[in-house]
Length: 356
Image (cartoon, rainbow, N blue to C red; front, side, top):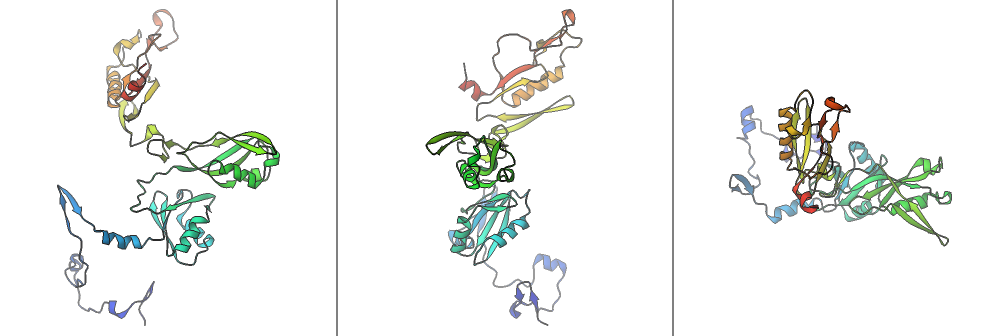
């Protein structure tokens, strides 16, 4: 009987004809049957206490050559299965060579092709839609890292409120979406003319660029100032240029400090590199003198914990004017309790920029 694998017949020269037996320990240690043709490994060493390895350019060229015709793709793989992405590639891409999709994590994957013609076809014939989502493709850069890649684009429904009925055609609505980015599809209710409040189109928008709130439509000598409404714009950080969080949540410019106030835990972002103001009702006083009357004085532990949070977040209290107390219990006379619960906290950058 022929010996075969998933890749076809196994050549006789790689068949294991050694009838000698080995113990499990020998197999793990690899103390026997090590081929004489084992490749020479790279030299390693240490820089201080850290291991160090020097990889020559010739070794890198070998790895780069395997991905000469590759592209980087991205999809929200929490909303679509990777197997469906592979089916889309097989069914929609009219290519002559082989194609392999290799997941990288965080929604990124390598589109590995084997010739330049197929690469140009896949790159130029988009956008490719998978489960009503646009597959974003980009050229593969050397040493691409999903952790360092800047993700500035997002799919956003754009509404054109009060658009004249004569302009409700697929071509015109997609062209209106093109003024914001790459149009993907028009809402089915818009195509069916189910209502005339607004026309809606899904657009792939670069949030790092300025986004207009209106567009001029010139038609038959008449100028129409058309309003644009964006629906559910995702968070975007202008510091690290990534979709998914705002600057107050950015791990690059801030950390977090936590302190317990009784049964509750307050989590403050620590923002140092940009001006920052935090204000509101903190439901506790910062000094014992900030409460007037009442059966019990302020809790010293709560006052100390609140002070520790402010210090850990590198914040200072801003100058205030007007009334001394910001809260009262609504009573009169000796029953009236006054406290300072509302305040503004700023960091050094804010204080330096807005000294007035």
